[in-house]
Image 1 (cartoon, rainbow, N blue to C red):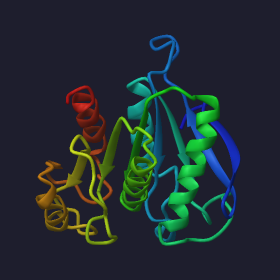
Image 2 (tube, rainbow, N blue to C red; image 1 turned 90 degrees about the vertical axis):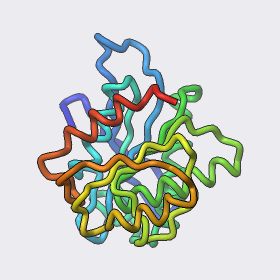
Image 3 (cartoon, rainbow, N blue to C red; image 1 turned 30 degrees about the vertical axis):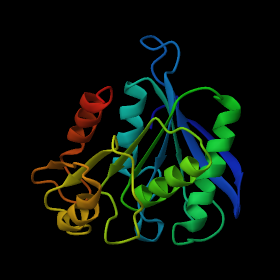
Length: 212
């Protein structure tokens, strides 16, 4: 993402996983206020940790003062293994979290994901809840409702969706959220990949972050 991005490998459940870590600007934020894990879109359709939405999420979190960590899912880039329908990917994301906890044991945790990555992170949040592990906030962009079996999510989740998303129709997101009574922020004119509207994602998250 920038010259200061730290690239590294960790051992996942199916082999090595390629990761990237970005820190907030030390001149303006000398001590990180949290840790954010970012999950990318579907690995079988070109999704990588360098996807523009995933990078936008990482930049947003560093602007908020968070350590932002991305990972290529198994079978992508230098990550070993093969696509596992979100099950193995959730396991790998939990492995990444444990690795980051060795470096940042006490920072509040945020989980964020785009498209398929939203499914992985919603599953991880549910798993951590069962383990009594606190998650400060969940951020889901282009949430994969109707594509995968999205679990229930916390009431303070930030959800962003494109009005013209033809990959995950807005109507499917409404069907998923309606029983939970959770709102979603819709970006007018945005498609699934938020072409020419990526800046709105950052603005929305930053403006909503410290609100209950």
